[in-house]
Image (cartoon, rainbow, N blue to C red; front, side):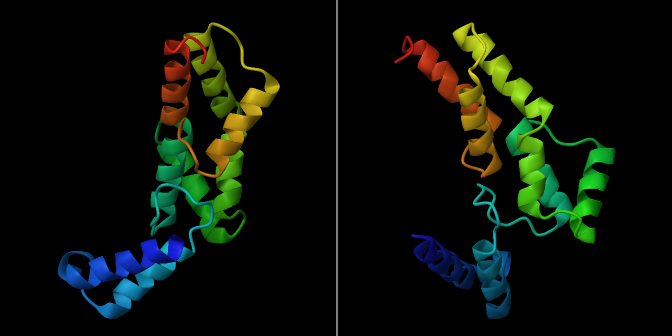
Amino acid sequence: MKVLRCSLFVLFALLFGSAIAPSLSQAVNLTNQVQKVENHTRWLIAESNEDYVNATWYNILGRYPDAYGLGMESQKLRGGEINRQQMADNIANGDESRGRIKDIYKNYLLRDPSPSEVNYWVNQLRYGKVSTFDVDTRIQNYADRGGK
């Protein structure tokens, strides 16, 4: 499936190349970036560290980082102190992320989540399988269906 998606992207880039990739080499470069995405997130191409930091914070925490956070995380990525997956792990495992999950449960299910429920959602967030918006929507739908 991943190869098919990449092939379709290259075909699209070649057909409509002037807007996306003016040359074949740029189309191939974009395809390589898609294949190198480290954590299988929804955003397939985050060319700069700043774009990646913004996208990761937004998808995990539902907000963008402040200027200081953006600068610090981008600098850590540039300097090789952490890689992109480590950064996503740190954000997903942080107090703010866990607090958002707890708030969602309290809001819709009127209870605290169990430790295993929190860990489940943290892992989903870490690997880009869901965003906090998805967690909110899924828990709301679950509550609306009477817990079924």
